Image (tube, rainbow, N blue to C red):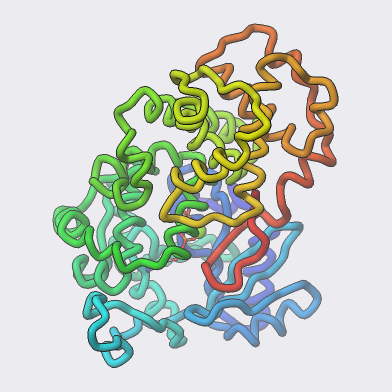
Length: 410
Ligand code: ATP
Ligand code: MG
């Protein structure tokens, strides 16, 4: 199998360190799925029998942080990235007593989830069989506790672990995660899971803004994010997730947005530019800004006007609502949008030292490839200063769970 060959050796080292300290430790979740599908994982989740305190002791020489109330996890900082290490947990019981009378929440919604368990219990508490595979890179061995994970990966099948309607009621974000798998990999639903996706859609209404925001951030960073949005639209989920975009999906602006996002993701997969959230936010807003602010068709920029900053800011929030992204990411996205006019007109003097230049240049190249087709544009744009690029990357490369999350990647 040798999945190990496709992996970052530093991650194997972390697993090995935990195992040598006497604990069980595995790579879990999306990274195993991606490795099996021959895609390079964008990040790694680890799961272990060590408790958060024990994990910290094993890595006393490195920076670790215990985070979260709802889920206690350890963040281990490795070469500027965050590796998330969680302790095996059991599947929690729904805690109806915690639901206040009169509050409209699904009866089986789970509000606390932090009881430690075994590796097997940890696999069974996960959402889908394709997400419940554990990989031991030291022994190069896959553990498929549900007995269906490997087969479902092979057949491209999304199958809920347990009764899908109950699992969606426990945590409605799983509905979003299911459709995401369909979009990202072209997987299809096992019939019962597919029926529950449709019938449980309204459970999403109880999901907090912070969790929706976190999911949007992940999609904006995802190299297949455009496919995920298409699947959201197809399953009628986009009207809950991005209602502004959903209402304009079939318009020239909606189509242009998707084409830009697709080109951005193609460039990201080719390693031409990084997975910036704020760049993707500016892409989602640009066609609507051309229409609302400039009164222009897709590809016809507004003129640079001093007073449009606040209008752009409001529009960005409207496009991405109900998610509420950080102020820092919004500022970066607005900055990226506002220099497009100057870039297109070739007013490049001093622009290369502008803090918005790296993303601004990338957005202009994306627009040029999709629509402007100005032959000389890319060569006229000087490479951004590497220091500026570093600063615009906004710190660590992973933003995680809603509570106590580290600085966001802008
Ligand atoms: P991605 O590639 O987008 O990171 P992922 O499946 O790894 O996909 P994460 O949010 O990183 O998504 O979650 C890691 C793993 O944790 C999942 O693969 C799944 O096993 C489990 N998980 C995440 N969210 C839930 C949930 N809401 N319910 C049950 N299990 C979950
Ligand atoms: Mg993951």
